[in-house]
Length: 498
Ligand SMILES: Cc1ncc(COP(=O)(O)O)c(C=O)c1O
Image 1 (cartoon, rainbow, N blue to C red):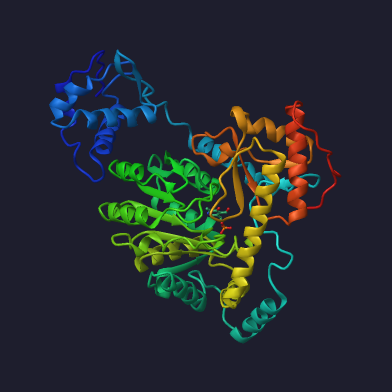
Image 2 (cartoon, rainbow, N blue to C red):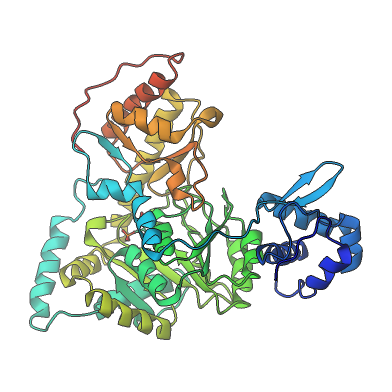
């Protein structure tokens, strides 16, 4: 049903909002969620004026500030415009365009990710600053490899198909969760080919076309690709220095999304961490929505620089159904292609069946190497974290010295700096200039489901210091080519081996 109203009566609206208080979270967010659903249902035409705050408050028996706050949320979501002195008008809810054909949805999602393009066709001439990985001279130490080869010999015969993963590796990963305050058995862990496959399997199992997924406004490009390729709609929520805006996520839960995907422990790309108190609140809210699939992507959780993030979400009351993802890629080596999902045993079993269908299991030699790496002395991981932190701070200092108008927060950890260009300068234009100066960059907007953050870039910190210095010199030259008024720097040798 579609009804057009120039002026929406407060009683008419209150009647249609009769079940708005259902759900959890602050009143104003529940009201905003109910109003948003009504607008999306096409019951109110673009351009119509919403009732005055005081009148709607009277009809709903709430305070005027609740209505004002709900209208503000709608304004932030760009669904209404508030014109001073004249009221609040609906805008931006034109009926959805007809769905594009399935193939074009898939192609669009395959083509938008410039970070993956860089992996498929690594540029020979350019210093590639698109993927964020640790460049380690010794990613897999000799003794670890030798021990893994011996393990392989000892494992002897057997067909080597282990779709759920080697029992010992599942048990080792489970034991790590236990030390983080989340008791876990091997049957609650599935070994995957990187965390990327874990997101893919969960998507395959749970997402259908037109489902809604909640993510942060900035998130892992590979997750955007998978959700989009499945035909899901992404609705995003702000992420700041304390991770995602938990109130906003709780508000969105009332809309019954199919899946919530968050990166609470060293967020990609901002490097922020969700504090314990927010984890506790989010866990309590998730408890009331057990049908919503919740993913905590902790791929970067072990890359903290100074402080370990708080315990995993599932260790807080109510959130034991949360699916946690982990990976060997960031602290060890992406080439291993070892990641995992931790979750309730029945869900892990379903995902393992899918994994068998997808690839019959991850390489056994890789799993044996991963097991050896995880069993190293803790100092081994501490050394790598120290290396990451040193390089991260090095890049931060070099940027501050050479490009002081570029701004960023020093992250809690991870493998990149999330940098804002001054005065709304376009990161895409900078990327074009950077390519002429020997650097491949991906504009930050590809990490935003809505294509926002056009003035941001993600700069990887995982290279050795001399390469980071070279990168900053080239970026400075690229920036100066676009802003000749700045101080001059001499460009170094353009030939680089990455
Ligand atoms: C948040 C996040 N999730 C998943 C991945 C993919 O990791 P993997 O190499 O384990 O597949 C990445 C890689 O950048 C990531 O940043």
